[in-house]
Image (cartoon, rainbow, N blue to C red; front, top):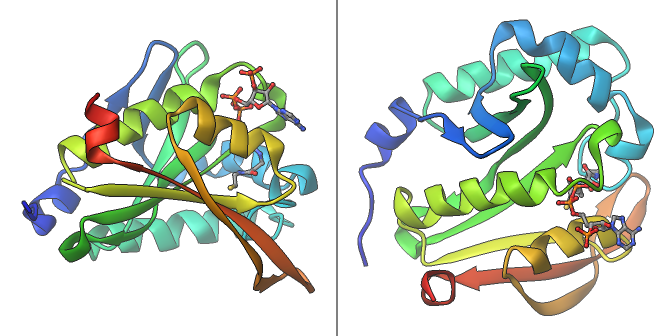
Length: 190
Ligand SMILES: CC(C)(COP(=O)(O)OP(=O)(O)OC[C@H]1O[C@@H](n2cnc3c(N)ncnc32)[C@H](O)[C@@H]1OP(=O)(O)O)[C@@H](O)C(=O)NCCC(=O)NCCS
């Protein structure tokens, strides 16, 4: 198994481009755009984080991410709609275990843009990066069992349902059942 040069990869995160999107590192000036989607309770309902209650929460998250880039411990990318140049979501790797060749992808999109195939497009670029540059062998994604939109993104991206893990996290005041999906490198390359 090939283990990538981690420091080099983090130090030089490239922009990823798709027909409609640009995936790039977050910038301090993205707070307003981020607040617009991250303050939406409907967007936050199915993710681990709480809706941002003020623009300071978005600034705080961006500051934290910029520090994490500097410390080379995150691959979180802003999803920019090329047509407008605005940040409309995020797509990145919430976990990465290079020694095991395993990573987990996570994403969120402004509600205004749901249902246009945009996150499937972003995930395709992130997947190419994961298998090509991060040298993962297994890419995972998980969602709460009622999150049909996210599950559909995983299925359209070629991932397989591996199982449903009952009440496996306590989040937002209740136990949540998660659906686990994955794709292996060999399946991706086919
Ligand atoms: C999940 C999310 C990123 C999907 O983004 P998106 O750009 O709308 O996704 P896509 O358009 O690429 O694909 C979504 C698919 O799910 C379908 N879908 C959406 N909601 C659905 C629902 N309630 N039931 C069934 N299908 C649904 C869409 O019709 C689309 O399928 P299609 O291409 O066959 O029409 C977006 O809904 C979101 O940000 N949700 C809130 C945050 C979140 O849940 N993040 C993921 C955490 S695991």
